Length: 355
Image (cartoon, rainbow, N blue to C red; front, side, top):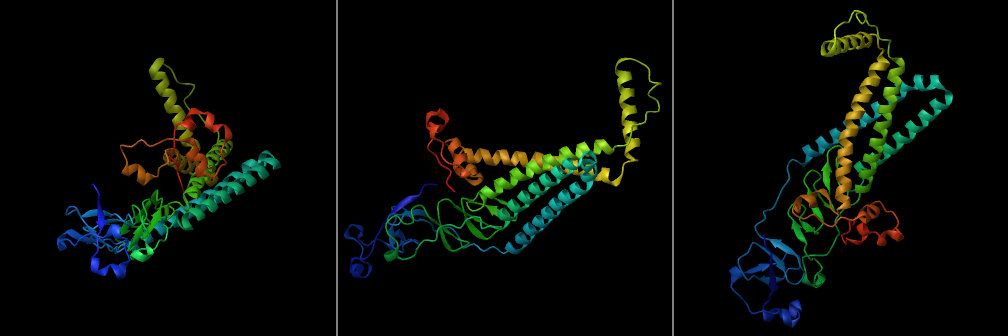
């Protein structure tokens, strides 16, 4: 929808009270053609009866048709998100504690060095994952800039350029800000609301959210490898009852051989200890989690490479954006590379992913 720029207008008799420059004084118009800017409080002259218009003085965008919004289900969404956080914390503790308990007899039976190495790696991965999760979950996702508004004397020309008014928070909303109905606040550079951390992903915690994904993926890969290695060492030997009596050729022989192997594996599974079953569950769960998180991480890194967030990507489906590897370096706070300007991939773009 097009936004019409409106010209400020006041009554010349009230000039002494408002102290507007003379070039902003316009003759009085009919009542139904005037509107008031929420940003600076000036009366605006509308060239048409548009519901959405932009102030020619402060640059604020007003939507007269937007009703006052009230969010009555905020408490239940907060409770849902905190429940997800509790479930995720319990799952991480189970993977850490269960993995250490199930694997340590195998690694210590190999050598003391392997046991100490495994314990050290497990401790580092556990601390990194839990700390990055805690920061992403409990850190402020990013508050929009607090700017003066509502009165012409304190709002200078262009101070609220492209600002809109949040009907939920009843305060200005900057162009890169979105209101999260789950958290009940406006978030700067909001990417999305993640129920698993019970928080929004925005300018304040986006980097910690990416680090949480990376550390979780590395941890689940390590758990999968150690679970497979350990369960193979403690798996009972396979017993084949009819392997010597197999006959036939081609497909029939292959099918009979496959059935015999499956039956031998099932019989040996009944002799597996509780530690072995926990290792199997750890492998299945960690492998499933790492596949899902890898897809999410690749999606997040691609949006950062494009200089966008998930919400900005949705709002500009037809715009491919300017892809630039410096967006990734800037996002993670890496120093600028001096030779990057000689590479075509670094020279071809101007868009920046500012956090």
